[in-house]
Every structure is written in structure tokens, then in C-alpha cells.
Image (cartoon, rainbow, N blue to C red; front, side, top):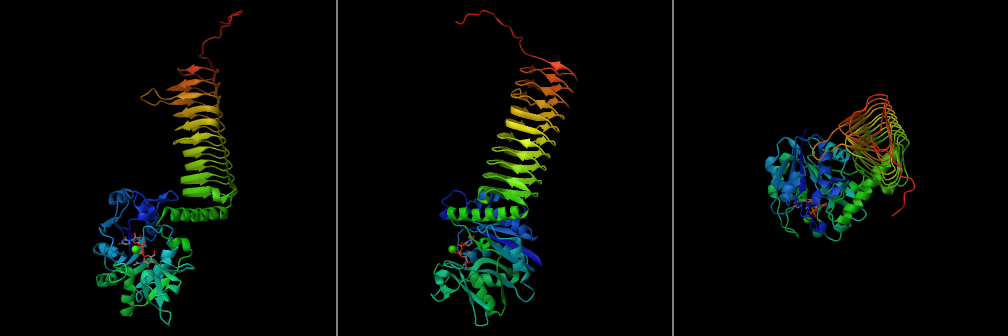
Length: 451
Ligand code: UD1
Ligand code: CA
């Protein structure tokens, strides 16, 4: 079965009060539209068509590099009118799955369930949901035999019909060929003067096509966003679900309401995550890792048994097993910590390798450097990697000891087992097994009178 995905995203989103088109507002760090695209891509469609209205340039540039078809709906004359814009692009012999760009938490399994309910005889399936508070939604009208015979919009419904709790989520799967015959037959003779896509249900019923329904696993899947308040509510629900999943995987969250996951996070067993930790991008955490409070961790892999202490910011780093970072550590892109390495407080590391068992414990900047194993970098050490124009490399081989408050002016190599005396400014390579001291000699003036 060829699958066409149509994403309706032309609504203005007035209630967001934003210059940004509504579908570009982010949930869990990703635009609402991208949530829908990622979820529906897993169904392997032959084409995905986005019906956009406002801020077309912005919406399209948010999706660069993705295989998508775009169609503009200049005036928003209803969901039926929106689908009509996409029709010319669709292939015959396909099923069209209609999604909303502002309903971000729909899941692949619910959509698969909807698609599975259509076979060769039943060519229309709608995703419905029983709500305690159905006000505002279109209602599913059924006959005595419990068969769906139509959808009535809230604004067009009688008081009796408004008592119906089964609502139309707006998501439906329909034979593209039938859609082509039904869409031109829609009229806008209703309270809103819009072409309702939902009216195809009555047309299907009139041509004796059995209408299937399917329900989502959770209500949040079908919730649409019209305001920033609704966005915040859905964000919380989503974060809660993500945290439940992490706990199921064996992680301890000291307070699941104070962890935010804006990307993809995997955890091993017995991981402990303290409060106010934000994860972004792709983060993989091995077993027995402990993460202190107030950390921001982005695009990182953290090995078994490593401890990330409080207030540490990590971006684009690969951290081995049994390492220790922070408190107040900062690991920037291109940082690699080998097993057992330590990066202590107020230490910034950029594009550098810290070898196995090596320590940079206090107040240092390590940039464009390669440290071998068991290197000890004293407090206040700076790699002077930048001359204002170019970046240069610093190498500290195995078992090197750098005394406190040293400046290592790159390019420079401190060879194996050498020591740099505290307060040195090292501008020349240091050979193996030696001591380098590069600082002014101390002079004591005895009996000196203070001015
Ligand atoms: C629609 C359904 C209603 C359902 C509800 C679920 C119709 C007629 N009604 O209501 O049965 O309960 O969704 O939320 O379909 N859109 C366009 N172009 C338009 C109009 C809408 O692209 O001209 C898009 C919107 O951006 C949005 C979606 O379609 O993503 C739904 O529009 P919205 O106005 O929120 O829903 P209703 O029409 O009120
Ligand atoms: Ca509307």
C-alpha cells in the first residue's frame, strides 16, 4: 500500500501572539512540525506534502535537507480546502494519511493502528477519541447499528449532539482516489463558511463505504496547540512520559518534574540524575553514571561509572568510564576524556583529548591539546592555543607533570615523564625525563623599606 502523508499547517496561530508560524514553536527542543514529520516518516510514505499558509519561507527553511513537497493555501477556507490544495500532488493507488502540524505528540504506533484498520473494502478510517470534556471538537455521529454516519462540528451541532463524547481528532486515513471524488463535492454551507474535510464522512456513508474508527493510546497524542499555555501543558506531559520511560530503563530521577529532555537520551541501569538537569541533542549515558544538579548536557556519550558533578556544562564530548567532571566543569565540542580522567572545577576543555587517568583538577583552560596517560595538570594552567589568527596544538605525553600557573604556548610538546615548574611560560619543546623552568628568578631585597 502506497502511503501519502499530508500535513495541514496553514492555520495562522493567532493565539500564539508570535512572529513565528505556530508549527515552528518548539516542544522538547524540536518544532511541532518536525515532531509530526519524524513520527510519520517511520511509516515509510512515498511522499510527504505540507500545506502551509503563513511564513512559508520560515517553515520551509526549518525543514532544509528533508524530502518534502510544499503547497501553499493562500486563504484558510477550512480543512477540506486545505486538503484540496494538496490533491494535485498526490498519486493514485495510495492511501492518504492526513495529519495536523500542530498536533505534535501523535505516535507512530497509533497511526499504524489507524492504517491497519483500512483494507480494500474500507477506505476511510478516522482517529477518534472519547473525551470527558468534548466541547469545541467535531463529534462522531453514529446510527443505531453503531456505524459512523457523519461528523458534526461543535458550532453546527444541536444540544443533543453536543452530548456526544466521541470526538474527531482530525487525523484520518483515506483512499486517495475517493478523496479526489469527495473533495470537489464539499460545500461551505455551514456556520463557519468553511469547506469541512469532515463532510467527506457523510459522503462516504452515502456511497455505502464503511467507515472505520481507531483510538489513540493516550489523549495527549491528539491534543492540538493553539496557545503558549497549551504548549507548556503538553511539554510537561511529554517530559513526564519521557521521565517515566527513563525510570523504566533503570534510572533514578531525584525529581522527575525537574529534568528536561530535548532530544534523544538513552540511559543504562542505576544511572542517577539529580534535579535541574537539561539534556539536548543525542546523549547516551552508560550504567552507574551519576549526574549532579544543574547540569546541561548536549550531544555527549558518558561511560560507565562516571560522575558528573553539579553545575557542569557539556557540549559535544565523549567521556570514558570512571571519569569525574566538575563541579563547574565545561566540556566544549571535540573533547574526549579517556577512562579514569578527571576534569575538576572551573576547568574548560575544548577539542582536546585527556588521556587515561590524567587530571586537570582546578581553574584551567585546555584547548587543542592532546594529553597522554597519567598526566597531572596543576591549577591555573593555560594552553595558549591562539595567536589571534591561528590555532595551535599542545601535546603533553604520558606521565607529564605541569606545575601550577603555567602557560604552555602552542605549538609545543612536553615529552614523556617531564615536569614543568610552577609559574613557567613554556615556549619551546621539552624533551623526555626533564625539568623545564621558565620564570624569572626570585630576588630577595633584605631590609627593604616600604614607601
Ligand atoms: C477540526 C475538525 C474537527 C476536529 C478538530 C480537532 C474540520 C472541519 N473540523 O476543527 O472536527 O474535532 O479539527 O482539532 O476539519 N488548517 C489548515 N487550513 C485551513 C484550516 C485549518 O491548514 O484552512 C489546519 C490548521 O492549521 C490545523 C488543522 O488544520 O492544523 C485544524 O484546524 P483547526 O482550525 O484547528 O480545527 P477546526 O477546523 O476547528
Ligand atoms: Ca477552524
